[in-house]
Image (cartoon, rainbow, N blue to C red):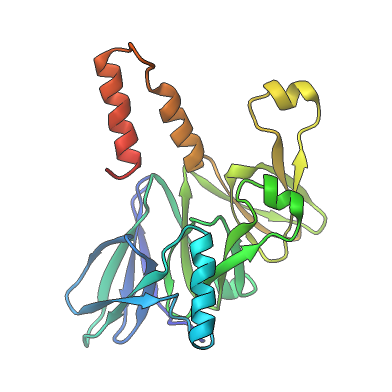
Length: 262
């Protein structure tokens, strides 16, 4: 095993957090700002990149950090190491209502491709990078642009998404059509493309967008019931126009501030 072998427990239903149990000298990495709580004896350290050691020198680390900037993520991540003699616990919370999904990368061929803001935390040794879509149409209209996240290694990683998450197993040649915003993650063997919605009336007035993702097996696919972009658009749509009641405006503004962390 190249990754640290960590134990964990998921807590909650729709507002989940994951509690990771660290043996002495074990380390877990996480996105900046995801920490919920940790016990005494755990050292928190900001690291450049993901700490996997796969960047290969200074130039490799700079290149890896530059690619993370493209996805809108920070240049730095945070490592939490148990420096005590007993087991210690650290917890990470999802940034908005939804589910946290643990993934054992050794069971997924060592690689998972996911939406660019899905990563929450992982055992040290997991490499967090970017996956560029090779197909021009997929890049322009696939909902996530040219760039998605890729998680590589043989350890545990935790991703999060909105609403309820369902895992689908696709047989060889089996096809699943998904709203582009509802795609959370897929295994490396999935063939991913986008397809234009057929019919002018359906495209213009169907309310489902002009494109959807076409996923062809074999492999695993994870989909979410409530993408954050859909949730945010409904909140904006509910905000009253000029002249609306004060109570309605205050409620909508409160919801807007809640989902934006203010």
